[in-house]
Amino acid sequence: MDRHDHQSDDTYPRAHHPVTSSYVSGPVRFPVDLRLSRRDDARTPWDAFVQKPFPARSIPKTQKERARRQKAVDPLLLEDPAFQKLHQQFRTKIALGIALLEAALPQKVPLTVLVFERWSLAEALVSMARYRQKDWSSLLKTHRNLETNSFVLKDAAGHPIRLDGPPMAVEDLGPLIPPTADRAVTVRETTDWTLTLTVRLVGRGKVRWVVSCASAELTGTSAVLVTHRVDWDAQRIMALSLQRWPIDTLSQDGTTPLGLDEYRMRNAQAIGKHWCLVFVAYALLPLDCLPPSLPKGSFPHQTIGEACRQQAQALIQALILYAHERLQLGQRAEDIFAHVFAKQQPIMAR
Image (cartoon, rainbow, N blue to C red; front, top):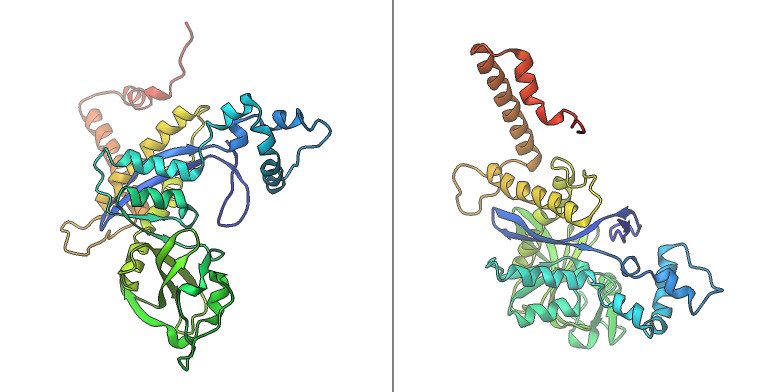
C-alpha cells in the first residue's frame, strides 16, 4: 500500500493500485487479469540512496516535489550498482499493461481491438499492438500535441484557419472549430455532434481523430477519441469507445456490492487471491443479468447490484427452507444454529 496518483482528481490517496484488463464482446464481458502496480521508490529505498550523495539535503514531503527531485537525482543514483539492480525490477503501469496483453494471447482470448484508457496511450503499448497486428482505439488527453501541418481546418465560410504550430495541443484547437464543422452521429439511441479528421499525432504517427460533443454548438461535455485506423468513421470509433463502459463499472460494482476493497490481508499474494475471487463473481453475475434469449444487439436488462440483491435473497430463502426442513425432521434448533455458524466458532488452542 502506498500513495498513488488518482488521475481523475489529481490527488494521491493511500491505496493499492491494480492494473486490470477486461474482455468485452456485446453482452459478454468479464475481467481477464490484473497486476499490482508498485511505485519505483517503494521497490527501491530511494530516500536512503539519496542521502548518500546528498546528506545535507532534506527529502521533499509532497508527491509532486518528490517526483521532480527523483527525476533530477536518478541519473546519479543509477551509477550505484545496488540501486541500479533494484531499479531494474520496477515496472511502470504501461509495462504492466503490456504484460497483461501478452499473458492474454496464450489463453486464446479473442482480442481484436485494444481499447485503451487515455493514460495508456503510450508509444510502447502502441508498438506492441502494431507488432501483434491488433487494432487499437483510445481516449486522448487534451494536452497531447497534433502536427498542424498534417491537416486543414476550415471556418464557416470554407476558408482555411491559420493554426499555430507545427505542434498544437488538442485543447487549444477546440475553440477554433466552427460549429458548422460538426456532424450528428447516433450510437445506441444517443446523438452526439462530432468532428472527424485524419491528423498526425506527435509520437504516434497518422491517426483518425474524433471530437465528440453533447451539443450542436460544440460546448459542454466532450471527449476526444483517436485510433490508428484512418479508414474508420466516427460512428464506429464512438461505438468502440462505449464498449469501455463495462470496464469502467468494474471498479464501482466491484467495490460496492462485491467487496473488492474489503480485505485485511497483509501480503500481495493473499490480496491477489481476494481480487481474483471478486473477478470470478463479476464474470458470472453479468450472465444472470442477461435476458433469457439473446437477440442481436441485446444487453443486460438489470444491473450488477440488482443481481447481487437477488442472489442474497435466494441465499436467505434457501437458508430458511433448510432450517424448516431440518426442524420438520425433528432436529433441534440449537444443532441447526451450531451447524450454520460453525465457521464462526473460536479456534481453541491446544
